[in-house]
Amino acid sequence: MYSYVKISDKAGNATCFGSDGAIFDLMAPAINGIKNGATYYVTQSVTVTDENLDSVTINGSEMTGEPFSLAGDTGANYTIIATDKAGSTTEYNVTMKPIENLIESIADLTTGNVTSDDQETVKSVKKNKGRGYRGRETGFARDHRQMR
Image 1 (cartoon, rainbow, N blue to C red):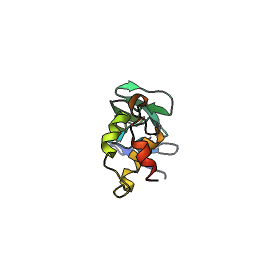
Image 2 (cartoon, helix red, strand yellow; image 1 turned 30 degrees about the vertical axis):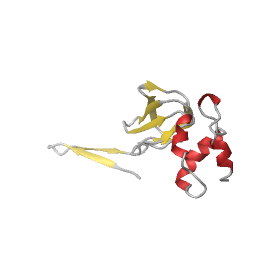
Image 3 (cartoon, one colour; image 1 turned 180 degrees about the vertical axis):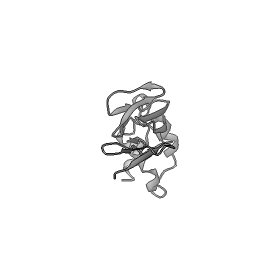
Image 4 (cartoon, rainbow, N blue to C red; image 1 turned 45 degrees about the vertical axis):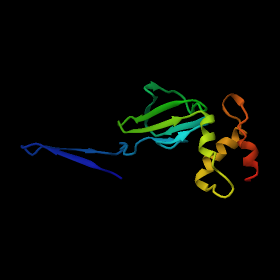
């Protein structure tokens, strides 16, 4: 698309400026690998994409290099802000929790009431082989194997 601007004064003098080669950045940066407002228990790998990316900060500290990780199995809140050179920003807030907190959230799951909504929670526990915080056996792994 080609755009131009015509500027004229009261004396009738006019000048035109064309957009040939100009870049109009109308898209905010995209944060990938996590969902805004989500809670995670295991480490998450995050990338930020934008053709004109200027900066990425986590809790106010500038990040360099990608992808970067949000450490799992810990209690932490992260605010990730991605800004492009046009000044557009995307902000995500993510909560990380210890894996042992999953025990309470899955205690009542059985083969009769588990749903696809429980999939991320169950995958997190399976990935960690049912081990609780600091490697304690939770007992969930034995029960969960029966649900497969």
